[in-house]
Every structure is written in C-alpha cells, then in structure tokens.
Length: 124
View 1 (cartoon, one colour):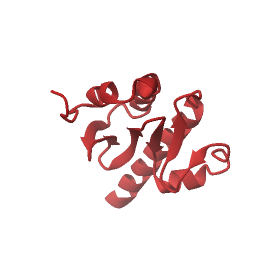
View 2 (tube, rainbow, N blue to C red):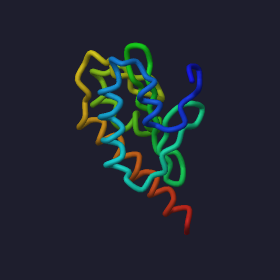
View 3 (cartoon, rainbow, N blue to C red):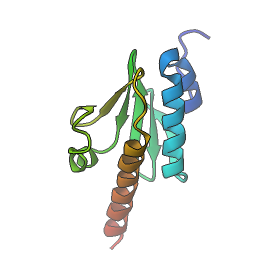
View 4 (tube, rainbow, N blue to C red):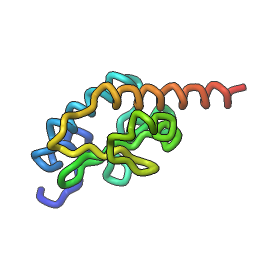
C-alpha cells in the first residue's frame, strides 16, 4: 500500500512525519471541539473542516504543521500572532515547540463565527 494517498484525516495524520503526529492529533481534536458539526474532508490531500463552506484546514510538513484559517482571521489577530511564523494564509507551528492551543482555539472560533455570520447575512 506504499504510495497510496490517505482517504481520512486519521490516515493523513498517520502518514505524517512521526515528530508531528502528536501535534496533528491534538490540533485535530481541538478543531473538532470548536466545529463539532463541520464535515471533515481531504481536499487536495489536505484536511479541511467545512460548514457549509471551508472553515479552516491544516497540513503536515517535514518539521512543522500549518494551520490555515481565513486570511481575514489572521489579519484580525495579527498582534497576537506577532511572535509566530505566519504568511497571509497560514500559521506555521514547528513540531519542536508547544502547540499554542488557546491561540488556535481563538482563531478557529473566529472562523466559525465569521462563516456563520456570512451565511446568516446571505440568507436575508
């Protein structure tokens, strides 16, 4: 089965670098707790939470994981993210550093609230 792409998020985490698996499992559990009704899917071989649009995603790399909330969320929390490695679209967390769980929870909650507000606004 070597070379086959994972078909589930659990499989994705199992296929990730061993050093990152604890962080990835914890991040996955944290995101599930924030968005328990979101559909969890692999798109482009990357885990995403969808409710009904993309909420956020994450990805595993050789020495870090990337958490991808919305660009607007990253911009909104730019001051709290100043000490972290970010791009316009992602927060990078090295596997050899503690997972900033409270910050990740805040970012994920902000994504859920923003998406629900946009969905509610588009209804009217």
